[in-house]
Amino acid sequence: MKRTIATIRDVAVHAGVSVSTVSRVINGRGPTHTETTSRVRAVIAELGFRPNPAGRALKSARSDCLGVVLPALSDPCHAGTLAALESAACGYGRGVMIACGGGDDSECAAVERLLAHRVSGMILTVCDAGRSDALAMLDREGVPYVLAHNLPRRSAESGVGVAVATDPDAAALLLVDAMTGHGHRVVGNVASPEQPADWACRFADTLDRVLRARDLPPVLRFDRSALRAALAGPGAPSLLWCGGAVTAQALLRDLRDLGRMVPGDIAVIAGEGVVAPDLAPDLAPDLAVIASPTGAIGDRAVELLIAAIAGDDPVASVLLPPQFWPGQTLGTVRR
Image (cartoon, one colour):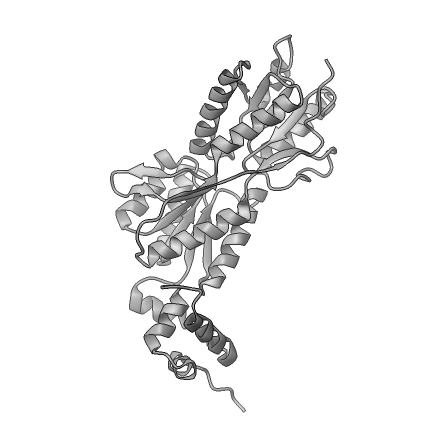
């Protein structure tokens, strides 16, 4: 016998509510932890009701999908954020549509693709939130968006762009506490291209300020191509910091190729963009990490975007505390 397909009216009748109430629950509008909401969701599950996304998109001129723009899913930070985004969106009855950025031109192209699919809002990680043509495009289109891993953005069109990120000031303080606690005085910052520029600049400013306040030498900044020269001489750093997972893996291999033992000859700590102490299992020992709370960033980004889509009052951006994994690469260096 062919099963009858449940309709939104069937759900309303069984739950004892109006069709508009069922619609609000499905669309994630209004309070989500009420008795009525729980009852409607229970009836939806019982009847096996599935909303028709095509019909809803025709009525609203927007689909129920949330657009997601990330630089690269090969980065464990972004992969972890995406997993959290998908799970959180599912809780609101939403799907996600993903497009990869990784530079201003590709970010604009990704946003254009998602706009063509009429997504109802977007969550993005961009290279530099302060100078993003992709975000300017969303401002002009009036499409709600939330930044993940970037800092809040101000623009003439949108005012203050909402963002969820690791607190860069807290991360800088953690780094200085960790290095001084292990007897390090000079830190080298290896450039990490996968790190959002706006976050990295704020982190760098705070790090410089904290080092000055503690009478420590300024940061030595260089990229991987200058590693050999940076490690030579009496003023060389005893600790290297890099911000992203890809750079961290490459840096450990570079040090191995140079014959530098970690942590016996040089200490290493990685930061924003790294999500676990076993980043490079083939390159023991375990890496010391100041990690992003990627799951919490994904959850909060969806929560703020759903509120923005519903037209709720503007909400403040969220800076979350980083997590410290001591690992085995931060030990005192032999001199």
